[in-house]
Length: 254
Image (cartoon, rainbow, N blue to C red; front, top):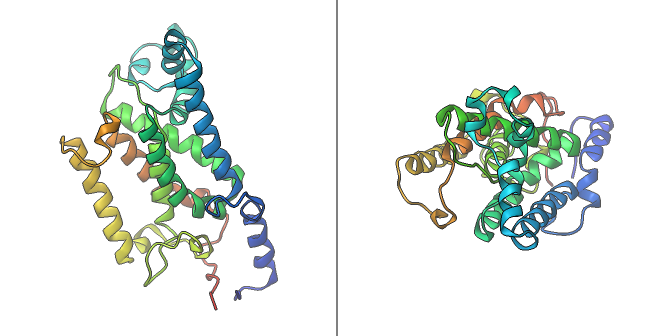
């Protein structure tokens, strides 16, 4: 591997990849992503297998997101309105639900985490979860249904990856995608692969919105609007999280 921008960039890149180098060899994932997967699994085990029915219901209601909370004065409630825009993303409704999100999280979270590092990744998770939740609330204002699952954050990671992990003339590069320069928003759409991927992704979610049954239907109702809110957050705002200058030239592979 060679680099065109000198040893200073090499040192910075080495720091960005530090978590990846020290992580357990689980699909070659960054350590912080392995911790995320373990946390999601642990919460699901506690939720489904260690709590009785009443405690489980209390647990879910107070950690899941519902638009209904924000239709009433916040001062007349407890504080669940404060943390549920994030904590809902840590809950899942079934084994299929958590496995589905875990697979996409591994696929699109890895290059983003390698690129932005653990601290920015945590901030990204919190803010993208909130963005997905409130986009869902905007479409379903006052609705009493509960929103759970990491798919809004996963969608945000997909959107973020579209800004750098699809190098020109190539497809999605999960392994080395974090090494490429960030594209501008219009520049990202110069990639035919990004255009096709984004179009298919939006079409799939809009079909769900119109009641078309797709894969994953056995997981229950799918919050297509949270997916879209998350994707838009990641795609449009990734530049605020990216420590890599957009003018940096990519690393080249021998």
